[in-house]
Length: 359
Ligand code: DP6
Image: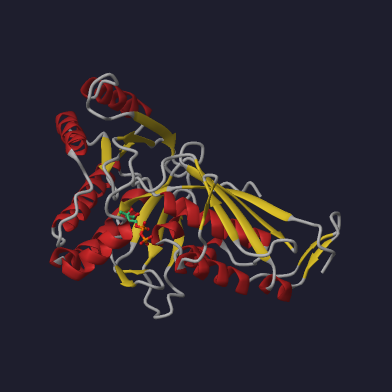
């Protein structure tokens, strides 16, 4: 190894993703293996993304991480699992210009510093952990010259947070639940890239940026233990829906896409209500948004907009095209004027987009 003065850094940027067929429930909590397949759309990194810089230096005496400028502990099992898996795949790195040479075996001894920023509220149901762990794993893989492709990396990001595995790709992405006990076949694949259906416009109506009361991890554990609806959903409903959703995406069939997306979001929240104790992620404003979209879709004859809600009250609205998005914004601003007390405080608009490597 070279003398103790150098620092090697890599920066990456990863967008968040929003599930249109939801992941809810694990069959293995440690490896993070889901009870069903899921499908998501990756958002435009300009609006909702994590930027992570990872650094290695012989002068670092421990692994450390800062999230949005505040130091956080890396001792949690999820971080440790990701770090261990990536370190096991590290390869030799040589940077002749800087006089750096790191042998494969050196990675075991070298410590890392990680600085990560979200350009959106953390843990408010906007899938911050998805972008965060995907970005961490992607940046570390670049830093350590790991040779794995994005699907193989997704199986590592999955061990940080299940939904993170889908943020390694742009466009529409499927997380295959897999069958293997060691989780090696539970990984993400890209169904279509972001150009395939680029007329879609995604609008996020931020109902509340407060941190959610029940984390996804705790909520889905309770659902697995207590909800009969979850068992029915995982075995009977989702397998059919996944096939139908893949067809709808392939054919750019917005009517089917919207129907499946809304139905799946509603069933996920029904599972939450069927959980003991029940979990309430949506609030009155969320319900009013659903009614507004349902009425409009019904009066228009064909769906113009799909809605979906994750583990929080914020609405993700997917408009068929720019015209529908403009009309949707008008309707939302009319129903929830910024000066009102409707607590709908901002909108984020973006096209679906692709993972960007800023490394
Ligand atoms: C409702 O991926 O945050 O957003 O695996 O425990 O970290 P952990 O959970 P997480 O759950 C996401 C749940 C969801 C649906 C989805 O993204 O598919």
